[in-house]
Amino acid sequence: EIVLTQSPVTLSLSPGERATLSCRASQSISSYLAWYQQKPGQAPRLLIYDASNRATGIPARFSGSGSGTDFTLTISSLEPEDYAVYYCQQCSNWPLLFGQGTRLEIK
Amino acid sequence: EVQLVESGGGMVQPGRSLRLSCAASGITFGDYAMHWVRQAPGKGLEWVSSIRWNSGNMGYADSVKGRFTISRDNAKNSLYLQMNSLRPEDTALYYCAKDLGFGSGTYNAFDIWGQGTMVTVSS
Image (cartoon, rainbow over all chains, first blue to last red):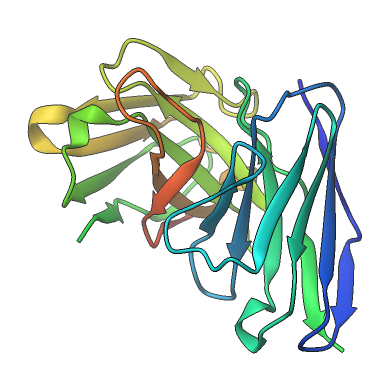
């Protein structure tokens, strides 16, 4: 099965800064990767699919890149509402595993 | 407005069974693959199971294979998860989620989520 490893585990940044979150797959998944945001007490929200396509209603400050085994989620300028846990998920084939998550916290 | 509402969770003893339901509204339910994802308290997300739009194919996580069964009734706009031989490690909030894709164009990405139903397995 394909294992996803996210880094860093925790990222501390100030509003207005740029956030770069990484997700590495144990084998190539082409561009079959999604990113989700989850805030406390809420269901996850789809941000990015197919590695680089923003989901409906997602602000342009969120962008995704990468293919093969290395992927990146970038938030160009952090807003207060962006502090949350972020998960990547491989969409290539079953089992549809998630990464362990990156917690983005206010510095 | 697209909405998914889960039900059927609760507290159950190890070895017993539960059946979760997910009622969909605001979409043509039969056009989409559907999924179950769970989250243990304080932990990350774990994919549990998926079913294609026409029930033609189902997939399961190794941790639930042989114990859980996913099904759907497109006429009732409903998704189900039959959970047998429950274990304490099955304790989690169970979400149903809609696939981003349409018909056979499954993305295996989840664009609409319910609020979840809590399952607690404890003696």
